[in-house]
Length: 266
Image: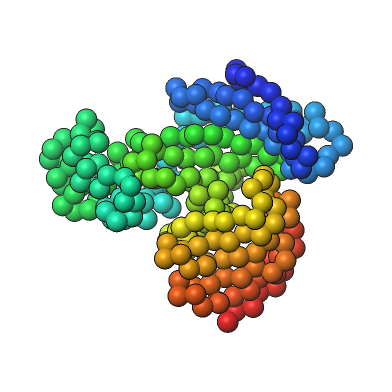
């Protein structure tokens, strides 16, 4: 396995990180090895992460299939609906433009007309467009696949799939930048919860730095406040407030080191 341009990120005092590029399914793909905790033997932890990366790399056909299958199982229904909602992303072409103009080389006229009439994006083409943008390995033994598709179905959303070698993909994060869905166990209720989470439209941070620090505010597309709370070293800390789309307070959750300790529902 060859890692191109491999080097250490020395800009953060909170964690140790190395990054480089590998060829994943014929495409240059960013990889990161990250230690988020203090450890006595950095080189040992680094070696463990390398072994995980090698396992993924040398079995990338298998893991790439798991990425696509997981995306279909948990995201296809929601993203399919978004694709045919012409008002979802006004700055991008409508679904008609996408099918009959942007994707004209991939769809026959008959296929495009059928998809447009039935509001169903073919699953085989959905899988075709999905690719892995980056892979992060952490010292906890987990890995994170960033999944995108060149703004076709996934749109301007960043979807992260979290997993490990033994159990496969365990959780997902929609728009990791905004934390719409974070470490949510993949189960039969995932799509329902995902639909609710994706109503959040934007985020404001009091301090623009990584990991996140200070007050954060998340907003719905109607500009009403959705969530507000504080980060400390990239983790939720203290009281976080959650509101519905009409601005009504629905619950308060007390976090300690990113773990929900107490919840009050209104």
